Length: 484
Image 1 (cartoon, rainbow, N blue to C red):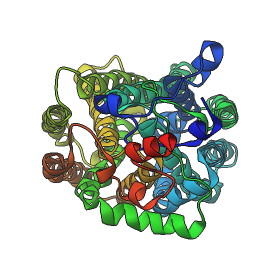
Image 2: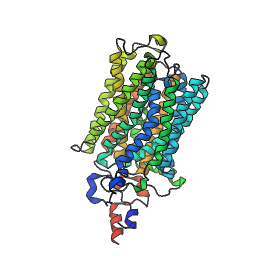
Image 3: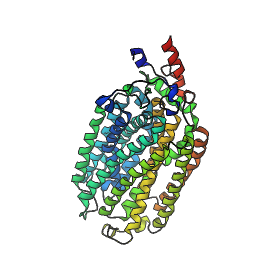
Image 4: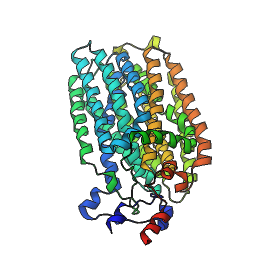
């Protein structure tokens, strides 16, 4: 293949439905072929998130970051998600300018700082200010990491692989939560302190520092070819001005993304009730650690299951989208009707003292841990479906980076508000009901978006950024240039 052909980019990439109309590039073979396989790169991406946000999730899943008093953790998370909301909105532009590997690398560093801050407060109890500041720094870094992650995960697979690839990523990512929760459970199984020890934080910190190095091992997106032979398109040396304009273009040319904003806003809101107001409020440290473990295990199965449904080849993409929506609807109401009856049993005023909290051997524990398992299923399926819907709107990494930025920005704005509400002691029932209502509202707004915007394949006419980027051309134009 000529050098000219190697540099040409036909759009419509990623659609197996249109494979016969696309320019096909030869994929490398042998070990190089394995390394440059899109699934390999998505797996490496999964391990980045395994080591960093996965362990962060595990720590947060203990309630209050594993501390006896969860107020500092709630305030830190409020600061984290406030800066996350701001940075994520512009992170698509930063990602397209710096490149995904650099953006990922910068993004991972904040997680090590954050986990280190909890080690610091365990040693120096008055270091609460450091934990809150570390949360604010992590918010900036997390906006970068998750935007780069979204761009890679949604653009590397073909259209009929997106559900599977997102499910595989989510499964690997949540292995971080499983490993972290296993470490915490082992460290604290016989603990009477109701908070985690220094050894847990040190173990988490070491694993997170390993995660910081993984972006160095990932392939250049410019060299990536999908399994159907189509190239992954990337911006060519964009200016900061063009990237900020691209942020507006992505929104202006695809306004249906706005209908997903309520779904995005609700997508981390529920963590506050699940982690602090349920797991952190009524269980002792041993039960919290076990709950945390099964929560992240259930996420692995939930993401793979919904991913398989969303990639069912026997169904059209529109039917798959409506099927995924129906599954989410059923789980939202199952989990929250079930949870409502437990939430009625306690308030902030009558949370039991540490020595009287529910243990794994107490009666009544079985039903409560199963609710937590179903919460994990719902979380994984909600996030996987949100990514899949964005991926159904575009195959362009630059545009998907902006979409991922919108997603994480709104997600974080919602989370910041809910964590702050918890920190100022809003009643548990109020937070629970707000969670239920926001999830239901997200589904209501998503339904017309699926009806109006999800097609069985994505073409150049659906790509606002592609139409305004001279480097991205319809495949017919590429072929005409080659013939000339």
